[in-house]
Structure formats: C-alpha cells, structure tokens
Image (cartoon, rainbow, N blue to C red; front, side):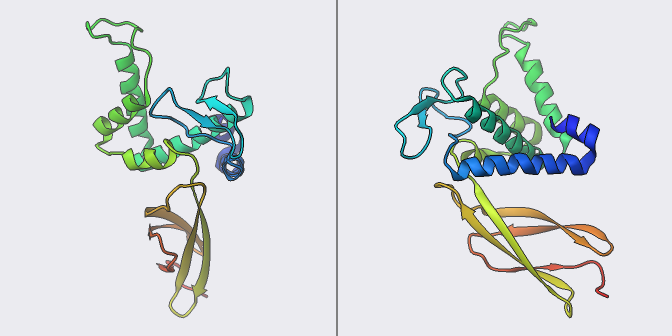
Length: 217
C-alpha cells in the first residue's frame, strides 16, 4: 500500500496516508484494543480490552476480530518502517529479506526445498544482527512484545537574537510502556530549506536548543 500510494500520489500523499494509519493505531492503543504484535510464548493469550473477560489467541485469524487483525497489520507496517530507519538504509532491510528467503529454501541436507519456508520473529532478528551488526532487542521489547507506545508532543519557541529554536518534548506513555530514551531525528523547515537535527530524548522534559541554519530576517 505504501509503494502504490507513493507511486501514484507522490511523497506528500504517501506521508499523509501513513499519518492517517498512525492515528488509527494511536486511537486503538488509547482505547486498549490491541494486544502485543508478538508473544514470546505462542500459547499465551491476551485480553482484548481492559475490563473485558474475552481472551484472544494472538494473531489467529479464526479467533481474533477482523478489525483487530487489520490494526495489528497497520502497526506492523509502522514498526517495520522504524526498523528500516534504525538500520539506516533500504538496502540493508532488502538484504535481510533476501537472506531470509534464501534460508527458507535450503533444508539441513543442503538441497533446495520449501520445507523450511516457515520463518519466525527470532529468525528475523538474528538475520538483522548478522547482516547489519545491530541488536534490536530493546526495540522489540518496547514496541513488539508489549502493547502501547510513547506519544511525543513537541513545542518550540524561536529565539531571534540567538537564532536558535528551544524545543521541548513531552512524553505520554500509553499503558505500561516506558518512556522513550534515545536519539530522535527532527526535521526543521527553515527559510533556506529543511534541515535535520539529532536530539537526545531523556525521561525528563527539559528543553533543548536547535541552532537554525538560515539567518533570521
């Protein structure tokens, strides 16, 4: 859907579509409608909503409501986009997928077969670490193995004398999700174009300064 929207509507239309899907997932998370994307123990079940006695077997199309499956697929797409950004390039994620496909067609005897065509989340993580050298265990624990996520609210004030923007990031974790701590890329639109800045997000809401590249007029 992302590729078709981008090819037919352009980058802006694609970004708007992704934003719409993000808001759908955000609303569902606020209403506690979504279970985790993946459970380490496949025998586990998860409550469909808080205050409800109904239990669902995770990602089972016969037992999980269709609207929940649709939202889980949307969240999976958003998580995969974050994984792509974490790896740094589309080529790396493409290499991971190619390696997974090649492993799926090779059985222990070395003959080409589709006997190992079932891939797991753990296989995916191991292949990412082999191809890119990056460990995504913390990321998976935060966004895949548990429900909820952290909503970031941005506010800024422009200091004309110093030509800097004072940016404040406030966090609102949903459910029991911990606050996000780490680096965050922020794109600032200025007079001379857009410039990316790397911010260090901490648990407190202390403001940070971004030096503007364009001279104020």
